[in-house]
Amino acid sequence: MKILFIGDIVGKPGRKAVKALLPSVLNRFKIDLTVANCENAAGGFGVTEKVSRELFDCGINIMTSGNHIWDKKEALGLLDKEDRILRPLNYPPGVPGRGSITVNVTGTKVGIMNVSGRVFMNPMDCPFRTADRELQSVKKETDVIIIDFHAEATSEKIAFGHYMDGRVSAVIGSHTHVQTADEQVLPGGTAYISDAGMTGPAYSVIGVEIEQIIDKFLRQLPKKFNTAKGDSVMSGVIIEINERTGKALSIHRLQMKSS
Ligand SMILES: [Fe+2]
Ligand SMILES: [Fe+2]
Image (tube, rainbow, N blue to C red; front, side, top):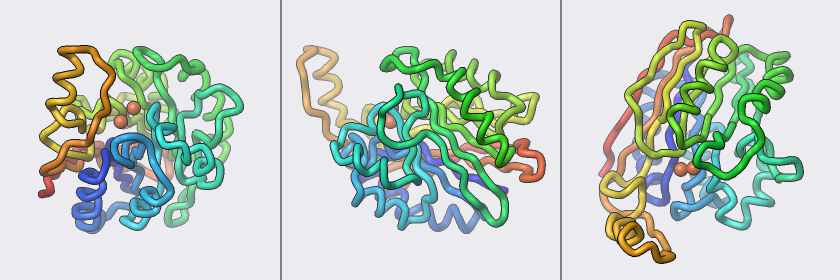
């Protein structure tokens, strides 16, 4: 089974890249399931129902997210009714939505989990222990499991990857918007990458207009950020999994330009 994971989709440029590039990727690589991080899909901040529909219509099956998922108010209601959009599992009790789902892909059950790190991030429940608890129930259904680990620090991401090694099919990092070159299948059979990268404007500071971010660093004043314009890049990884054992066979990075 082949799973495509698309890194954080940022605003209209990111959605445009998905629309232009995804059909050919699905076809060329014979992808069975597509998961994408949508935390920045609506104007760079959060997601709306309209935007999520647009992305599902492009061929994305499940969407994960992260700290920006609440930036648009309507996410509160949307995540309660749309179970194909996940938010990190390790929010405290009482938060809308869910952090994992199991779907049927051509006769094989696939579990998708979304977990947030907590180093240089908002305080969250322990990602390691929360994932352990969730795995106990997901494992009853399937061994084919992928986790979007939404985190800032590479140390926390790598540690989490090794902690999960042999128990899930893949741990894919998101949030930094910069693709890392450390993709590998860990000894226990878990595919790993620290960050899948961004799907959004290539000439930007992690998706935002360059001048705005430089000004923020220079003057430290509160500022509204706009998604940058221009050519876009679609970033992600393709993971091949033995659906009988749940072990990963390979992980390959993907970066494609779209004008
Ligand atoms: Fe992001
Ligand atoms: Fe994030």
